[in-house]
Image 1 (tube, rainbow, N blue to C red):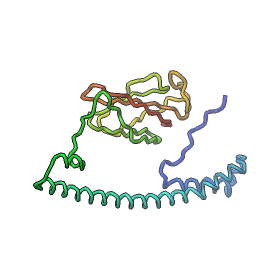
Image 2 (image 1 turned 180 degrees about the vertical axis):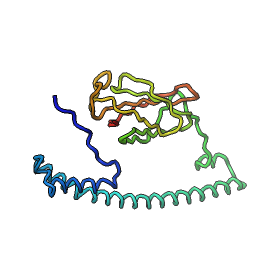
Image 3 (image 1 turned 90 degrees about the vertical axis):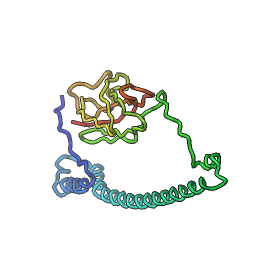
Length: 223
């Protein structure tokens, strides 16, 4: 039976990735650890590629984010200007002698909102973030009080996990074991490695589950 190995650390913060990889590449080459452990030429080249291109990718991403932020700010300002413009127009038209509700409805200035149907309401998950210590589920509350969350390791057998009334929901449970594809009905006790987790959400109206279920899944590695 092969000896159990320890979990390998890799920084969770992007800013720490470059110095971390630089150190590895230096120790493999100048430090001689690549030769000592028989790391093949392909993997040595891959490590060198990470050293060269990780900072390049980070710089490119930061530049793109700055550009995107500037464009987003311009968009928001332009839309806000349009909102103010048409708001003034609509109020002016309502004071006009020829004012008609039908005209306001045709322009879209007046709108009758249809209340959401509790029988067809389905939770919206806007994002899932997997960290080393938790899985964060961002869900949209809408007009409902909250969500109930069920959990599964196989997508078939479900356990009620929690109720959440303020997004996001944070699942800090540690892995129970197993690999990316979990055995039925659940993980193998004592095993290690990533595990697949399914989450099932339903909206709550008061304390009553309503509407349709939403099922999402992700890979967690929390030890």
